[in-house]
Length: 299
Image (cartoon, rainbow, N blue to C red; front, side):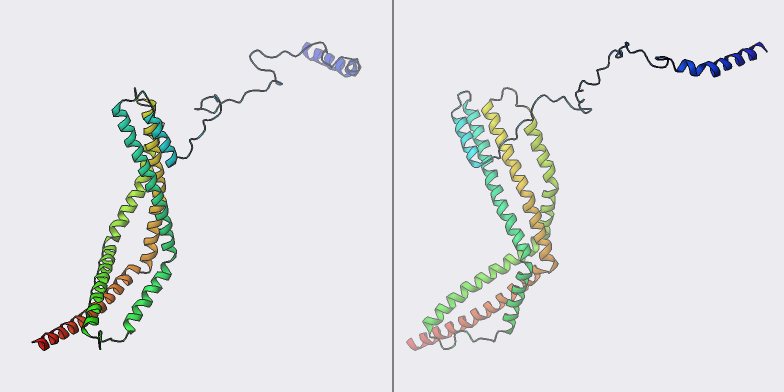
């Protein structure tokens, strides 16, 4: 009962005296002479914070290293001279460095050849329709050609010249036929070989990168280390150029096989060999006949 009376008394004081107290200056305002206190261990808000490195990374210690210049044959020649002038290499080290530079030059030369080869494959892929049309047109011309009596009306010296020419022509078309048969037989094996090389290329590049990133061997002279890195970089260039060359080669095979170009080429070679053999036999028989007649007349 007493508690209830007290609560009613406090309520009355707030109702009647609260507005008057609130009107007094500074009653609800905070004191102006109190400075905010920074919590210990936290930086002030107006001080710029350094960005924290990402997890698992090292703090930036300077500008990134500059990439090495592209390797050229001129650079290899200059490094070869540099090694030749080195005074801290024994004979075995100089010989080994020379072998590495030889391999590097060979790799760059082979890479240049592969660049040209890649372009040839690309062009041959684009010209498959034209090449097929040429083969079909030539085969049709041979089928429609009239039968010719080779050597008719020629004397013996002229026939002997024609026979020698026919013999060379027959050897040439037979060689072309053998090459066409070999290409046709080797196409499947070459496809497998190209696919295997393309599949292994990334792993070969990773192995070269691993060796390039590894520190120098213990007690390895600086000049020999440079020669070893030069050979690795040249070999990497070779593999990098080998990839598009192989890809273009596969694309060429796909384009040729879609239209069965190799089969048409083989059929054409068979026709040309048959005609060349026929011409050679006719000339050979005429030469034999005239020689025999000349021998009979000489008796």
